[in-house]
Length: 87
Image (cartoon, rainbow, N blue to C red; front, side, top):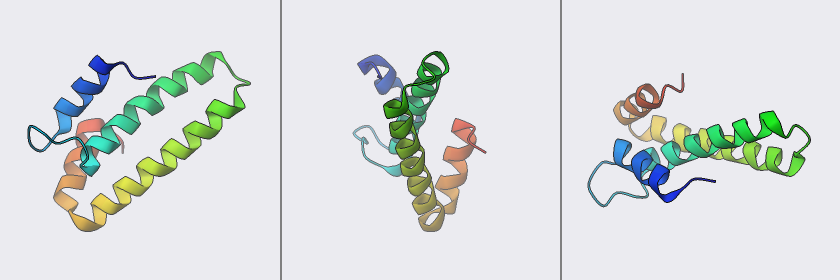
């Protein structure tokens, strides 16, 4: 689970303007942080299938946000992929 401090720093790194909390870039950044933390959890708890299902859903959700961003604004897509190191 993300702490408020980790969430705030993730948002601050990719936000477009000062009150931006819902843009695709912010959502992708938050999902990436959650995915990283859940991946580390699953390395220790290999049989936690409920969390594994949540991880798969988050990865699919992030993929959909990235696909939307790629079709709507290629520059912003390239910037967020580079900043987060996704591809």
